[in-house]
Amino acid sequence: MTSSSNNLWKKSATKVVSLLKNKEISPEDALNSNLERIEETHNSINAVVTVCEERARIQIKNLNKAMHNHPGYLHGLPVVIKDLTNVKGVRTTYGSKIYKDNIPEASDFLVERIEQMGGIIIGKTNTPEFGAGSQTFNEIFGATPNPWNLEYTAGGSSGGTASALATGAAWLGTGSDLGGSLRNPASFCGIVGIRPTAGTIAHGPQNLPFNGLSVDGPMARTVEDIALFLDTMSELDSRDPLSVNAPLKPYQNYITEDVPKLNIGISDDYGFLACAPEVREAINQAEKILLAMGHNVERTCPDLANAEETFQILRAHMLATDKRELYFEHKNIMKEDLRLNIEKGLALTEEQIGKAQLARGQLVKNTNVFFEKFDLLISPSSMVAPFNIKEHWPKKVENTEFDNYVSWLMTAATISLTGCPSLAVPCIKTDNNLPIGIQIVARRRNESLLIKFGHLFQKHTNNYNITPIEPG
Image (cartoon, rainbow, N blue to C red; front, top):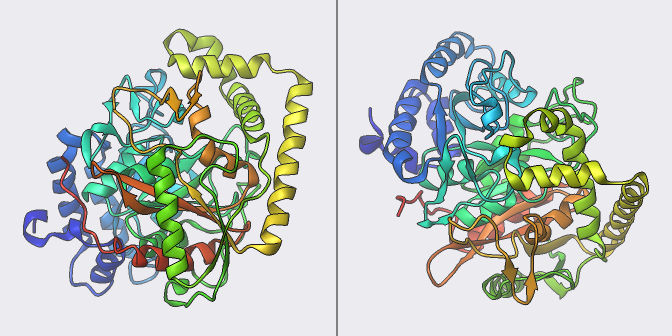
């Protein structure tokens, strides 16, 4: 059975899992179809940069033996893993020449969970060095272009996963998100991703186990598939001190529920950020859709002032703490932007870090006040549309010029500071047919509302059942 004959790659993850569950296809059929589609698209998009076919076939044999006891949620569905995340026995580079030959001896907690729930790891997806930056390129594998137009970027740092999903080279994939690394590429590639509340998905082991600013999350083509993968990945793991119990009611159950009339705040720039004209238009269109869906909509947002300075300090401090030893040993071969950011973190004073922590606390309080009146906040996933792949990061948006690779990410990064979950979904396309997405933000631990509402929003925009595209 081949992908050209069965077109499995065009189907949703939920549909393929249903076929697996009902034994209409085998895990081997799904794997073979996926491998062929990766091969068909790789020269164009360079998304799945390491394939582990032999390991996957061994996984399937082990799964077939245990299937009658615990098939999990995925029933043998192939899954791709971002190359920041360890997979036992599979080359994992973190996008860095420092680790170009690294073969982990153990998998990350979230990989263990995916495999326990019936997922078959098929490969690793491209990422910038240590996930730093929202343009997916590195000196090991090169760049990952946007499958809608190969002259544009797929975004990042989860650009490899996003590009693979958009082309049918994956049904489900993992991403991670510090300042928008999951939401930005979802927006650029026209797919879906969720940054969950910290602790929803256990991960590690890591150097900073109490770090809740960076989280892992599922990426897929539809909100329904996101619910499937979020159920797969969510479970208490005592090895992660932030980990919490999975909800008693699976996220997939919320897909069929109606949404009452909601009070929704919407903003394109939070009152202080730059925003590209076509992204402002996406928010205008989103507002029309929300009104057509029957919700109360108001142009407003929480008081998020001082977010950029706060994020820049906390991010630099986190990078410097986590990568300190690597920096002193390998700084000459690190990407310049990453090296400069680590140096910024090393130069921070205790007073600067303390003030940033307090400022983040105030942002959380302001967000809590906002959600006393509003059910959701809608804003762009990125302040720009996809840009040329030869440009490492946008230097100017509207009348605002940037002197670093982080400032243009603040539309998403601001929400990261609040700790609130955020669902990125497609909204419109630019005049040159490139996707622009929005992010839907809810109270902490309210992923269920995001799933329920996001599903209906995606259906309302008539892009829910779009099949994966051919790279072009």
